[in-house]
Each structure stands twice: as structure tokens, then as C-alpha cells.
Image (tube, rainbow, N blue to C red; front, side, top):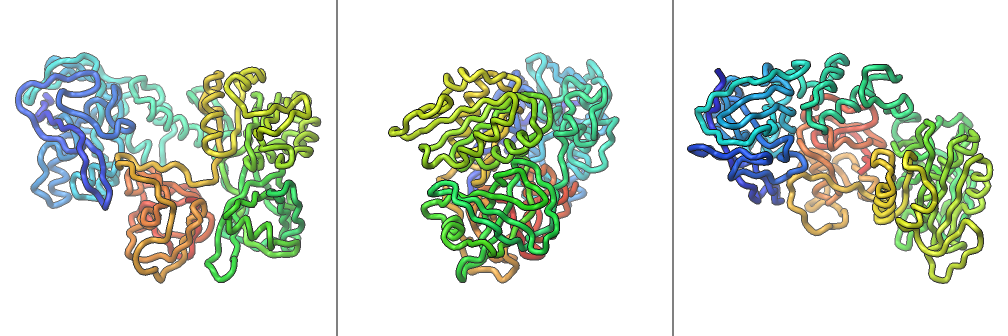
Length: 586
């Protein structure tokens, strides 16, 4: 008979960590006597990061005394006491390789259901003083698991644990954990996981995506599977940078110019997908080469690419492009990349942009027009005024080639005057968008300033479009994902403190920082943090892939081998360092 050995609770607190403050509930301690277990928590317990822990799906975390015994031996430690793995229940007799998702248990007065394995998280390593612990839990198949509270009630140490119902599919916690985090997944096991109603929605979604990635075409029996047009595709093109020649520079407005590029030897260019971008590397003066990314602004062909660049008031690279770049000049270009792409299908299309954000959706419009696509298309664009409305005539002509096109232009300047039936003074609002007749089943593609995309995406959701059909593109640094870290004032990216390194150059392309590598940093993630480049991570040990980043050029070495290598052209920055000059999409 399984037994509850210890009930452990702890309220969130601020803990210093690597020069930052983490708000965490990972510090749990045993309590004596009965404790009331409620739908969201045990009395006296709490979670610091409710996005990854807690809630009704993850109300109680369970860990086994057998795993404590295993880690004491494996780590050579005799100081591991109950609660140190962040668990609420320390148990005897519920091993991860036997307990299954959907199993139900009676403990004391309460009844519980197993919903998912533990979320891989750096905080368990922080609590134990073992930075690689998140990776070890997965690699050694000892993650622990979460419970949902079905019936509230009192529990206490010494209570017997009785199985009241076996979960469907009988997929163990250890196997479920491996299915998400380890390679060589069994498609049949993925299918089984998707048939377990008790499995948490987040894990169900991850398994749907994994199932879709394994299946080139849709087949019966794969719930939630994506179409072949939505499968991840290998990036076309070449590794690193290649030299291309500027063939034309065409002013579009007083502040926007289009740059036409071709190969230097006449070889055909690889096909790109509408919406993708090029990364351009330029040496300006005596400074280290600078990298910037610009969307392809026309349907790419084997004969050439086009990007369009806005001259920003203090932009070093955009200023150089506008002032100095001429036909015949040579520039270094990384091959087309990006997942903000026009997808095949039959649903109506909404292309919504502001200012220079028109470029990727303009490339999509070019393809739609070239194919005489029968889908209804809404082109909605906001510009300052007619003089600063780039591609006005071009888009109007392209829309005329589509059988079911709708054009709506907004001029935001107060002095602007309507000069066409499709032009409105002002900016798009929830009411004006609702009046355009956009179907709720449409796919929407948005590009522009962050606040613009946030507002318009909200309007579209309120109108009835589902969030997964609203796609956005952003060239500034992506929003950080640093779970549990207490927010601080935003600092512009900068060179790292201390003496410069002597290693290969590392470029964070989105943040405009190039700096030499120094072995004083433990990883590329550590260097990015030293430069205040916004970062995205969770486990920091190569398990969760939250830190996955496109590698535009160069190569890396993994200092801690990840449990599963990322796809080609990407790297896990949390556990890698440069082996040559690298350019990262950060």
C-alpha cells in the first residue's frame, strides 16, 4: 500500500539568484497534523509563478521517497530532506514509471487525479544548488507529477494512498515526460497521450504539435493535427552569409527605399516563402560588422530578392543604406528565414499593417496576386499620409488582380484628407474593423509597431477570430520569458561589463549588439543577459527548448549536451558557446 510520508508547504518568497531576484514557492517544508487540501492549493502553500505551476491542473506536486534515495546516492548528498524537490506530497510507493496520467487516488478525505509530469524548471536546481537538476530529472526518468483535486478534504502524513480508478491508455508519468522532452518519439504513444482527457491542456497542445510535425499529411485518428502546409519546413538557402550584389535602389517615399539584390555569379536564388526576411551584414567605418534583418517585400524569385528599408532618424545601418548604398555594391546576406509566412488553405485572408510593417504582408499579397488566389483578401494598412504611404500604387494594382479583394487605407495625420473610397482619416478601431465584414474564420497576418499589433490583434479576437489564426511579426527583440524573475527597469542592450573577450564575435541581430566571446560567460544565454539582451528560457539546461534561437551564421559547441538537439539552423543558447563567429536572432 502506498503511503503519504510528508505534507510540505511554503508560501512564495523573494530569493537572490545570480544578481537577480526570483519570486518562488519552491521552498517547501514538512508540516505536522492534518492540512486542508483545496481546489487550488493546500492551506499554507502557494506558487510564485502560476503560469507554470499551480492552478487547478497543477494544484499538488508529488515526489517519491525512492527518488530521494536515488538522488542521495547519485549526487553523493546526505542533506536532501522532504520538500527540497518542491513537492507538496512526499510519498512511498507511487513511482513515476508505474503511475499513469489519469490515475485517481484517495488520500485521507480528498481525491486526486494525475494530470501531467513536473514542469522542467530551473528553480528545482536553484533550490538544491544543482544547476543541471532540471535536465537530470528528465534524463533519469524521475520527474514527479502533478495532481488535480477532485474532492477537497484533509490529509496528513501517514495516510494510506489507494487507487480508485486507473487512467485510460495507461501511459506512465515517466513515459509521458520522455514523450515531450526526449528524442525518438513513438507515434503510437503520441496518439495514446492525446486520448487521455485528464492530461493538462498545455501538454495536449504540445503533443498535437509533435504529432503534426511527424505526419506529412493528415490522416484519421490524429486529433488536432495541422495540415501539411503548416508543418515546420527546413529553411532554404545557404549556411551563414554569402555576398550578393545590389542591382537597383528605388526610393518609395522620402523615408523608404527598396533594395534589389542578386547573386554575383548569376546562379539562381533559392525560393523563399512570402513573409520571410533577410539578414544583412554591413561593415560601416571601422566598427565591427553590423547585422540587421529586413523582410522580403516582393514575392522572391530565382532572379532576385527585394527588401525595403525605412531610414530611422538615428539608425546607423538604415542611414548608411539610404546615404551610401549604390547599384553594384556588394553586401553580405543570410538566406531567407522566418515562420511568419503565408500558409496555404481556403480560409479568407486579412493582411493588416502599419508603416514599414507592410513589407512582409506585401510579399504575401504578391504571391496571392501571382496565383490569382480565389480566397477573399482584406488589405488594411495605416500610413501617416499619402506622401509617406509606401507601395500605394503597387498594392492597389495587385489587389485589382484578385477576384475577391477588399482595400482599406487609414491616414493617421490630422491634416490628411480622404482622396478615395477606400481611404479613411484616422486609425483602425474595433468598430471600424467590425464594419469591414471580415469573416470570423479568416487567417490574419499583422506587422507593425508592437502597440499597433497588440491593439489590432485584440480587436480581431473581440470580433471573433481565434487567437491561433492571428499571426504577428516583430523585428525588435522578442518579449522576454524569464519565469519567476522579478521585473526590473528595461535597459537598452549594451556591451557586457568588464574587459572585452578575445574569442569569436557574437552578434545579437535583433538587439544590434556585436561583442567578442569571453570564457568568463558560461553560455551564450549568460552573455546575452550580461548585455541586457531580452532572453527567453525556463530550464537553463537544454531540456525545455524555450531558449531555442535561429542561428543566422556560425557554429556552436554544447557545453552541456541537450537531451534532444534542436532542428537544423537553430541552437539552444542556454547550454552552448560559440566555436566560431556567430550571429543569433536575438
